[in-house]
Length: 156
Image 1 (cartoon, rainbow, N blue to C red):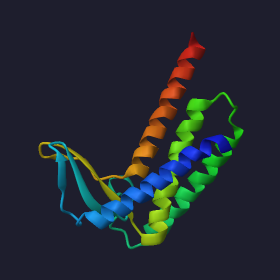
Image 2: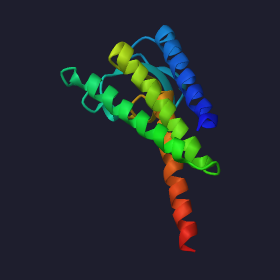
Image 3: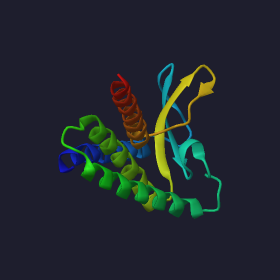
């Protein structure tokens, strides 16, 4: 397990550094166009994915910290039980772990998650996100893909 935790640490460092850069160089709500389909925009999310529960009375901060903490513990136990040959699963879990920790840090310190990456197509804008969110998404995608490939191989 320890040999994969460097991936998690790298995600946390990249996430926290880029969030600090975004806060120091961007003005809230004012998009900076990088490409016709990509902006940097400083946004604060008090909720979960897609701002779920962002307008709640404040209890959601601690709720999401607890949920994230439980996820971290579950992932650490899962990683500990992996065999040394399960590279894709270990990498996937390390990415998810790093992303979860990065967002827990924000929630604990600030009461919200700092988001700053925004994709769009014409007038359709994807909600802003961050490196931690990206790591979680990539980790889950790899985990699902690895599971599907593994099951497909078992059926042959």
